[in-house]
Structures are given as C-alpha cells and as structure tokens.
Image (tube, rainbow, N blue to C red; front, side, top):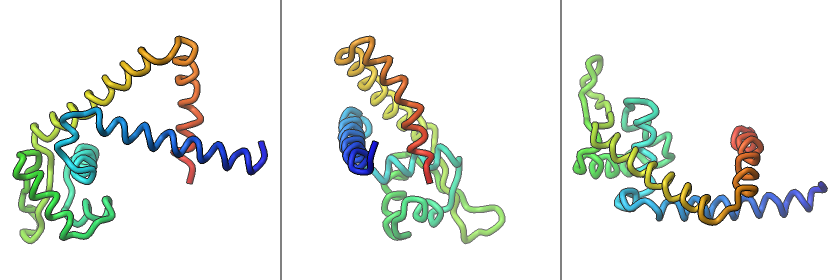
Length: 145
C-alpha cells in the first residue's frame, strides 16, 4: 500500500474506533453518572491500588485543582478513601473502596455485554472470525511508540 492508501486507512480506523468508543460510553447506564475523568481515575486507582492526588492529576493531565474536584465527587459517592500517609502526614493516599471497585466492574460489564450482543446480532460468524483476527494488528498499533 502507498502512503495515500495508508492515510485513508488511518483516517477510517481512527473515525470508526472513536465512534465505537463513544457508543460504548453511552451503553453503560452506570458509567453515564460519572465524567470521563472520574471513570478514568477509578480505572487508574484499580490498576495502581493507591496513588497521591498529584500523581492522579499528572496521569490524567489535569491540574491538581481539577483533580481535587474529581476526588471530592468520588469521595461523596463513596468510591474512594483518603488515608493520611504513615511516612509523611502532609500526604493523602487515595484508594478505591469496595463500592468503587464494584462500580468500575459494573461499567465494564455493561459495556462488554452490549458489545457482545452487538457482535452477535450484527455480525455473521465469518465477520466475527475477522474481528478476532484483526485484534493482533490492533494490539500492534496500540503498542507502537
């Protein structure tokens, strides 16, 4: 393929993946109650177990003040805990509560169920096999630096 074909392919992939991600966001009633940054913050805490607010702000590429607002809302919902650091009393460590973990799992389950239903109802068995085959090249794209 030449560069023009790859540019068109890149545009088509980007557009389709973006539309799919937006669609998936709407297909979780639980997830709609949270902002994108709030959902992403829960996912980061799930991945890292505990983080400082400034670490979360840096990972989300938002200001510390904006992260403070996100964390306040998540705390009000009962999704996170704030614990004073044992080594530095000025630092607060943020972690997920059991309810926060359950909410994150529910959002993911709702999206997976919708996507599985969509694949089953709209794709032929051959198309489902093609989707399985395209995962390897998509993983390569995700890992490309």
